[in-house]
Image (cartoon, rainbow, N blue to C red; front, side):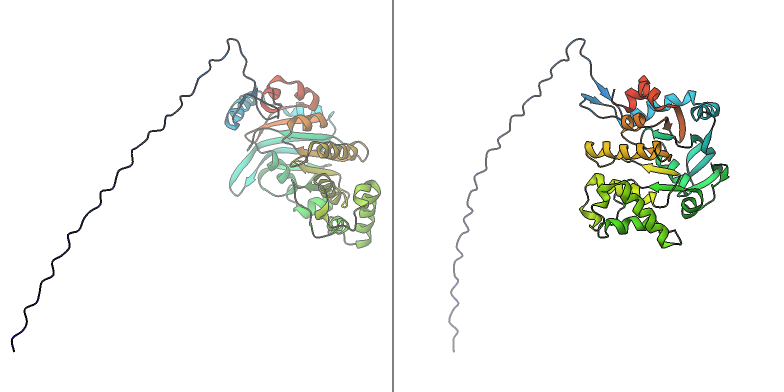
Length: 323
């Protein structure tokens, strides 16, 4: 049987549609208008402080200019004179840091009983490292830390607190928000072997600060920023220390709470005779409060004088006080 021939189907021609190209529209770029500075106009320059400025000095520039001060670093006799030759806490030729890195280089410090000392300087100068070294948070490569004639260099932080009367107040957010104010205070006395003694110390704090007494059964998390800072300071007081190491007391606080915290510290120094060593980014506030001020640069003391004199120092003002 003969096969029928297969009919070939003609393919339909493919018609390509022409796609119209969109015209490229170039956006006009507005030229920046450069306004020449008025002849004789001054640019205000700020360093470490606050305030409205036209030009802000960079951190590196502050550090470089601060380093130039180090050529006339104060002698030990100057540091002792600032304590009226009656120092309570001393640091001698201290080399300290973290791991194998040395941050403080032959650092010396003198502060008298009941005096306050404020450390200022550019970032990375070693200010907090001084506090950490006193309390036992760093590696000590050489040198010594003496409190009331006793070498405390090798003591652990808990021994510094219980045996040498040194308390460290952290920068911020060290309260336990879910615990009550009273429970937070009692945490400050955990090293006391007699709970009744810690309880009595906490009651003394409540007698002193009604703001905390009114909230003793409330969770610490409901406190305002200033009240939390007060609680952090008061928790350290439960151990009844003689030396307070205060790291950035004003950090994160509104101006009204900053004033309150400094009033509390002033009361602890003037009425209770506490010795206070602080690091404070608000250099103007810290120096106005402190009896003694040190300007640290690269792990060494570049300038040391009374707080009031440093406030009037033009170089300190230009670099750290905002003009």
